[in-house]
Image: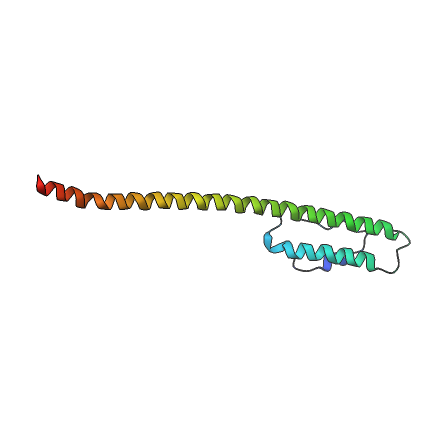
Length: 120
């Protein structure tokens, strides 16, 4: 999706092919393509005789909504992934604290046990 060349296509061609999953790196490209497509649609001075301006605007808006739906789904997935990673990080930090406490307790046992063994 690195270029916006596909945005300038005639309105009678098939809608833009959006993937079912959009990588985070492509979000800017998609948003820019939608903005460019909408700007170009309303900026055209003359409507085709075969397709009135209202139909071209309607089609461009529907394509933009479809692209924004995809972006919204991608944002939602990323937000869920982020929340999952946050939960895992909290669990790992809790595990780390428990392990640290256990190691401290274990390291103090031999000294105390050795001191008691020498006295008996």
